[in-house]
Image (cartoon, rainbow, N blue to C red; front, side, top):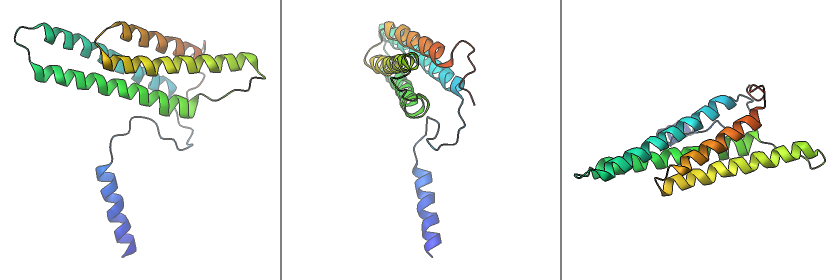
Length: 159
């Protein structure tokens, strides 16, 4: 009887679980940094398209407010996914603190933190406006982080 109850509770939890956007935090060692970075880039492109659609629809004489709202919601969803990816994948699991004894490695670590923080803040700013300067800024932060994190060979962290 106890096992049946546990199965029912587990089933109910699984049916009501929300979507998971980031890799699990179980120490499985299965990571695909490039795929995660590419997903962030795709979110940025989606945000950019949403911003241009919101602007275009807003200029039409006969406004379709339903479509504008849908694009705003889409833009915010993708910005949130960027923030979640940075927080749960890179900050919580992949970027590791480095001792100040190794000055070069510590400087790299601090720069990675600065760039990841920039990604989070610019994603937030894309929620607040349709100014494409934030799309350019977030792309720049991603580009700089990708180059620093993956290194010159670009394969360093993928498992």
